[in-house]
Length: 314
Picture: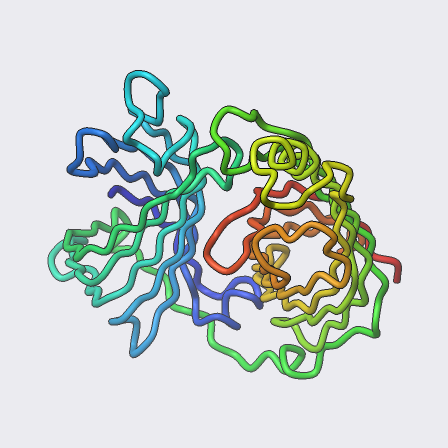
């Protein structure tokens, strides 16, 4: 793993709010130690947060990986983890870090978790998780010119809030059922929800959405023919309607999204009625517009990677 970190010193309020985190870019090369899984090269955007006089850190990265040896019907049919070359990947790491021990050089060590999945863009997609120890060195080229952190009380962080706002969003993408060879199908999600920002760090939402997932239409037709014991006619409605609650954890104009939902209309019993969503959002134009990338799943089983845009009505 190689990482480039941009240090923050409190020039903006959000930096002081989160104890001067780093943001930057990482690259990971991993040999999975298995001839079927092969090797993966990935790139990430990341954030690092510091605690206990900046001796302990927690980092999270989100990015794209390239699997050199994915599933192939004839050549690599045992690799049911990676159904495509391109994968969504997330890492979490944490541990001890000491900077500038000698002329800009320091050390760090801790734990690392790396997840690879293509979000069911293409089957198969069983994914993998790597749990590892990490140790390495860090270097600060500006070690002899390190500025001081700007420390001051930002009272607005505690008192800032906004009234309830109506938000409309549309998400779309492609995904495939777990039946290998059926092919990716497009989907669209229409969402409407109330959004309440309680301070600079947090917003809460509650709303409803309708899912037009055409892969389900194809799956219903397939199972009605291949598995008559299911008792399907093939004409079952593939659409679903869900209600959800959510939270946004804000970092300046970027936010981490978490949702928990329940299907109130679920004519075809795919997976289960509870779903969850995790992703990132970037706000634009005074928070009136946003773009998002999220992973929708049923607990740990991903259904789709959603690319979305939305508008808030103030």
